[in-house]
Length: 153
Image (tube, rainbow, N blue to C red; front, side, top):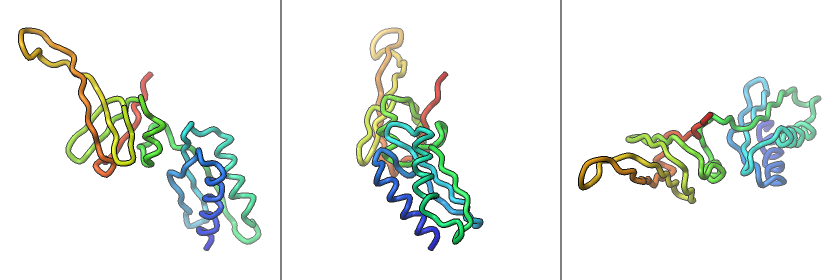
C-alpha cells in the first residue's frame, strides 16, 4: 500500500518532467525510499529536489515514518534505460555481451540496438605497413550484459 502510494507520486512527478526518467526505485523494510533518476539533459540537484518534494510533501509523516533519498545515476554506473544511450551519443562506451567485449564511440541508438564505432590498425592488404580501419558493431539491447560510459581525463 505505502509502496503504491509512493510509486504513484513518483509517476506523477515524472509525468510533469518528461525529461527525467526512472532508473531505480526501492523501499527498504524501515520505509527508506531510494530513488535513482536520470535525465535526457543530465540531472541537477534541483531535479532531485523536485522529485523529493513531490513525494515528501504528499505523504503524511503522522501516518508513515519514512526516509527519502533521491539521487542521479552515477557517471560510472552501468547504463540501464534505453534513453541513457541516446543521451550518451558520441561518447566512448565499454559494452560487454555474453561472448564479446567492445570499446567504441556510440554512433547510434535506436529502439532495438546500438551502433558502436572504433578504429584499429591492421596490416595493409597488399604491401608492408599498417592502415587504420574503421570498424563498427550493431548490438541489440537484449544482448548487452553491461554497458558503461568510459570516463576519460
